[in-house]
Length: 298
Image 1 (cartoon, one colour):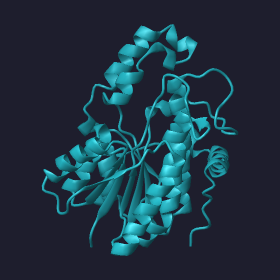
Image 2 (cartoon, helix red, strand yellow; image 1 turned 45 degrees about the horizontal axis):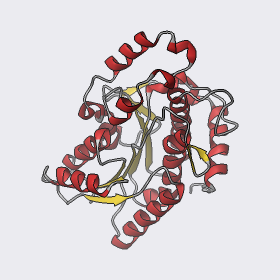
Image 3 (cartoon, rainbow, N blue to C red; image 1 turned 45 degrees about the vertical axis):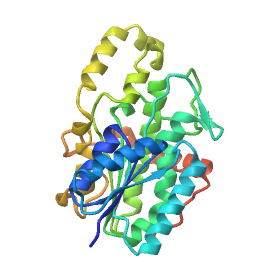
């Protein structure tokens, strides 16, 4: 049986290393990103590993929900036409912003880190279910520990601090991931969260400034900075281990709803992400702002 995988934000960093790992594991890999030049470079690197089948690149700005819809349509139509199953979806996309931004009229961090992967996943559920056994892997972050846990609106009240907004969006996505695993139990679609730990990436290099954290943490900025730099001292290749393991490890067959930690084995999920009240609030908010409400899974 052919094995196919889609990796979002797969043209560099942890996403590219994830794609390389999947190619080595025998998957035909599609990487998604904004830049065609980076996409071509990623495909060249993947194909240099002598994969069973050549990689391909699809262009999409994953900050745009309209482009996420177009991407999902392209992927679904392609698998329907070819008759090949989609066996792995890795939602690797993530971004932290030092300044408040909006996309689609919504706060950008929540869109990129949660609504975008939520929408792509929901739209591809029929394709993933048809290709079962299949796996969904959503990349999470230790930043969930600094998140505000109220999800009655896209943006919580108060000032904008990029690291905290990033953590809140990742908490929403982690709660969704664990809830989705319950929803899809018995369908043959397994759902995992992958925590890469830390690695120096373009995202961390570009946002490691005091204003991304709240004023109390700024007072401790030298300590925070040193700790953050130590936590991101790993390589992108090492950070990709959790995603590759979640997508490929045969010992995970038939299991679902697990968080695969930086050491590439299951770890306890952040407790707030298991709260059914948070999961329900995230579900309502996500459905409201994507208009992609999924029906009951057979």
